[in-house]
Image 1 (cartoon, rainbow over the protein chains, first blue to last red):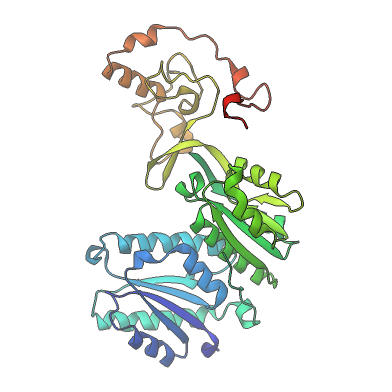
Image 2: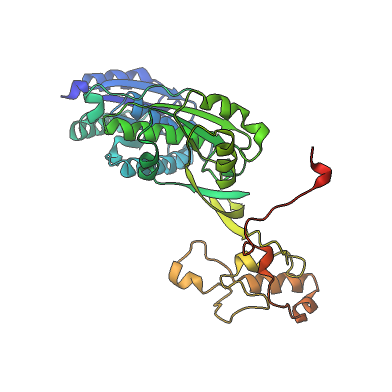
Length: 144
Length: 228
């Protein structure tokens, strides 16, 4: 079942300077993964998290720096608040809030990254694909 | 600034579930400032409704548009144009914006995406406070710029009720507000004292003339010099 689960990871470029390695590791764990490098986790908005879930992913994961190490000072604290806010949307939608997750990684900490990969893979196993994605239904791209 | 909050998704779903092409219209002034109805919130609601309808096995064409103000007809032209491709519109403006838009779309249903709450100010990041009820009879000149109509829970006109404790309004006991609501009349006293104008408190104000508020029906302002 795992190969059907798609995970999109939005990662701070400082916390995860080599996103390709994470993508390969998640693929190795049987997940369809896309890793997006972000300048800072604070740049990720709630609507982006929801939109990714609506259009393509079964899980979205954010990676940021430790709060005290954020080069934009408030980025990591904003990330955790936004994830919590977006999770409330999922609760309102009767979806598992764990479909939006986050991790803190100090730049270059391979040990923590390994644990994060295991955590994402395990959560994906538990949650499975979104039912409507499995049924081939995805949101159309909104137009402005 | 008009402050509002988003309606529950289920309520919005109930309003628009019968329509296939739905336009979400944001307002980028007041309700954007209170993070309820601006461009970002339109995108949020679009994605959330997409999730909601996908879960229900429905595919909807949800479009987004946002303008600077929905309460001014000239600003609504972009929304009106976008609505030509929609079966229904959800406006994330205040109630005035929703009605202005509805008046320009006689053949398209327009639904509110927000609950409009009050005229207020941004007190700090993520905190908006009510400080004007549009009573039509402003007393701020007598009360040191602090409104007892909106900020005193009992709307008292001549001083505090006696229920305040440690400078805080007694509504904090039951509502457990964070941050707590101060006693507006204590604030008025402190500010008048700082301004050396405590004598203003010695003037007894008569019962408030609520006919200038909403008790005489919908209010209007007419300015012939501004009319076409």
